[in-house]
Image (tube, rainbow, N blue to C red; front, side, top):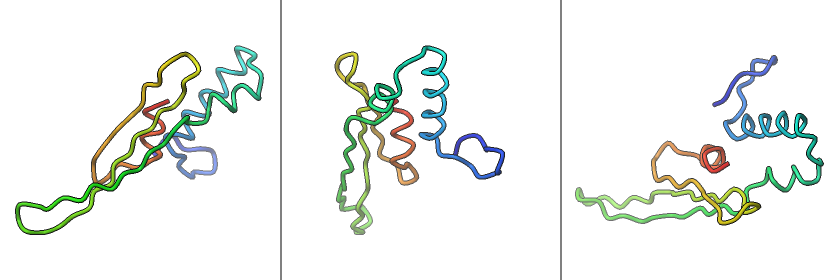
Length: 95
């Protein structure tokens, strides 16, 4: 989780990134409509990876791939395969 607001409710990592983008946009006087476009991830892919484990168990793992923005050219994005990773975390990393 990200920083805590005055209500003591933790905000997500991606929400924290969006707050920082809003602050930067205000300083740079970027048009709000353009910022809404820039803030939204371009593409999010969620995959399920079935694996036959060495111990005989069958497990399904979830993977995430997010491409944040292609405004300035090809997208760089986050990709992670880990039991504790979330789509929110990968969106924040990709941004």
